Length: 525
Ligand code: FAD
Ligand code: SIN
Image: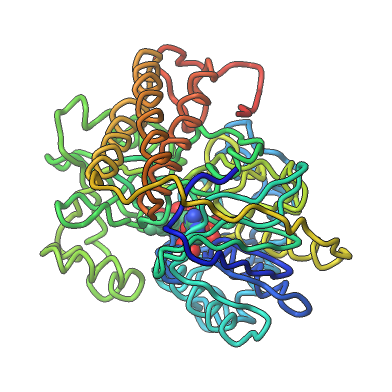
């Protein structure tokens, strides 16, 4: 029974064949594949381009070179995943990668080439060069092109600045969602045969993150409230190198910089990665992030440094124009000096459990992109496999839906009831709790964990949840409140998952259980 909303006003109900929540690369690609015969509502809680996809730098992995092959891409992905990936899902993704690249090219993406060949770069965990990219603005190019195509499709209606609150669920079936129109402050119902969650990840649960503000775990929290299986959420990936600068908001310094020879060093110039892994700077991300964390803690350092200056100004400007320009705005000339870097939360490896078509355990509900757990990333995602997962599973999800004869959804849902809530004069509670959750997660559920810290975080999050529930039952809904409620739910799932894993594996390192167990299990919450 819905609890609250804006003051009395006519409740608007929309009806579409398909409801897609999220306009990242997963949402946009699925919309394009579905819109030939079906009407599609495409929802973004901000402007359509805003989301992690837009900021992707390094690129998208695929076997595109005669010296590479599917077996090696599969083996590298499985190895980075520390024994926890689903091999069938990885094979499915890797085999479909070249077709994903072709789909992007058909939509207008022009990958960087050397004469007629793709310029392929590399990143941690890849043994061959297989990362196709558009200089260091791969995500921007993908998003702008996909969105242009979407805007030309008459069957797609784009709703920007609409934030989904909860799914419409009856008799174990999903029939759409309640969605807050941020301009009118009204809650509207969107009813559809099929609903696709493409809401991205949850890295905003951490104080420091490479992600934009949209990554608040909304899809994971909504799905969890609806009864979906949420898998392996303890595996929060920290990117080793974000710019350390008070105004940089953890701006990402692409792993492709290390792929092209960039070296990490301490303030005194000493390199250190060789002490942790024979692959040095190109070890998988979990290893590099833990190594930096360890050097910072043992040396009492605020940051370490990453050097690519030896490549020279022209080369750097050609290959990494975004990073070069961004650093210039902070007074750092990376062709002359090293960049100060620190790890920050970057990617949610766990998520809503799905099959290879993106279908969840709730009928008519799909999840694709970072919000989903397809099994391809296991305990640690290999770099540039995420955009790939978005495109491959967006296509397979759409293909599955396109083949079905659609049965009418439940249409009779109670309108959102705002009669028992009032405007809040205590908005500071929301901002305070928001900051507190993110600080707790950073300090107690970060790169290195312990049972004591996890238990403390769990205890505190339980109190915060009660406070948020009370606020939610008393006051009018707002976008910030929707996100806070989801942040708290997602943080709790991460902590619960972390507490239930009595070993260290991939991205989850607990100093009370430092070894990897022989038995391999997924965490389901
Ligand atoms: P997103 O692109 O995050 O989009 C989420 C969408 O959901 C947004 O439109 C948002 O408005 C919407 N949304 C969320 N909640 C709601 C709600 N409640 N109601 C309505 N709408 C909602 N991966 C790679 O493979 N290669 C890279 O080079 C790479 N570089 C990266 C660099 C950065 C800085 C970051 C942050 C990530 C990078 N990644 C990279 C990861 C990759 O970009 C993401 O995993 C991927 O783009 C996620 O796409 P998505 O479509 O699932 O979600
Ligand atoms: C990067 O460019 O370092 C990000 C790549 C990724 O997260 O896959």
